[in-house]
Length: 129
Image (cartoon, rainbow, N blue to C red; front, side, top):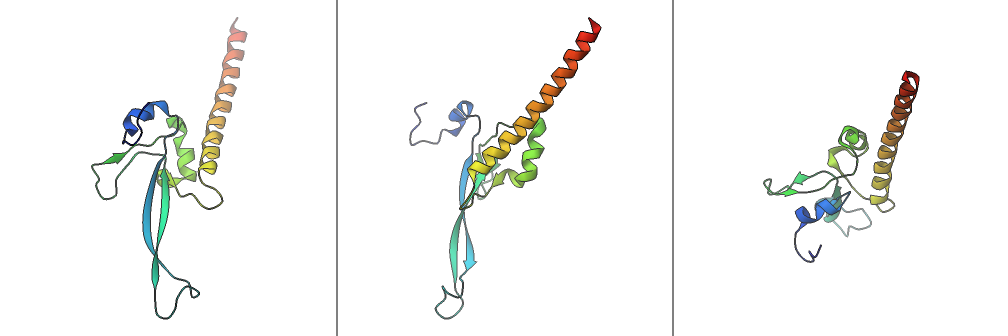
């Protein structure tokens, strides 16, 4: 869809399997001894949270940011075990790649469960014929 430059998450989410909302936040961090030049000092660090679940804005709770995953609802608890709170914090080495892999692992496990169930059902119907 033609949505360049506008907030159209609601319109585009139906075209996405996984929809991640990236949120930048800041925190005050103490400086290391090497960074200090006398006295106590601190600096502001910027971090990113990548949300896979819809969530309210931290300052304006009536504004909701959309996000979703391709993991089926009955299996979502497995993803939440690895990424509690509905988000993950990407690092220098890994981030979105690990999340996508975790998501694929949960879905693959679900597929294996369904394949096993299908084999049992097929065997049962063979016996009944």
